[in-house]
Image (tube, rainbow, N blue to C red; front, side, top):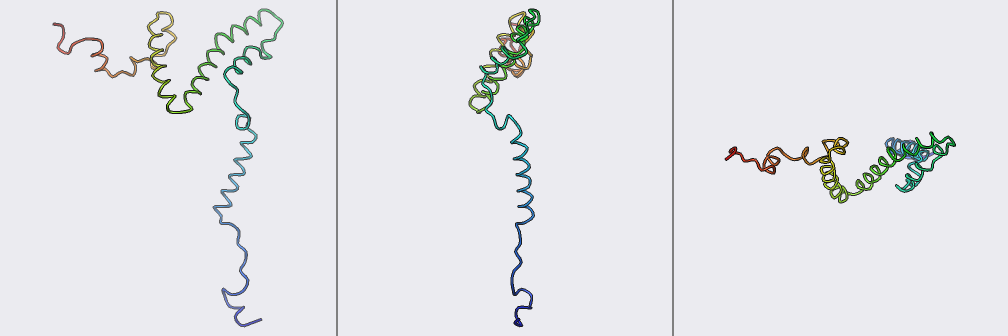
Length: 152
């Protein structure tokens, strides 16, 4: 053994692993990957709107032989599931890009405002989806034709 080999800093360098933050990041990434691979929504293609409607209309729960149960299932589909699936499908489509959102948003508010004017349908339209909710007060007064000085 030479005199130099025993001094500090000389000789074989111990092999060091990656830094602590790199090991932690690798561990977190493997845990996240394992969690996501078990999630059906992350690995399968989402159903289309047509497939969702078809599943809701002809699913196992609608195959009852009893006529009253079958009638209730059909009514449930047309009154609850179909509107909810269509609204969710359009919302999901619109939220994919900002351009779609800025196009569908004002169109939705306009359609809701028109539907709100129909006596029986207006009960079903929430107030926050209409133009009257979003329009500033000064603009509403100006659009209604009322003058600031009162009646002339």
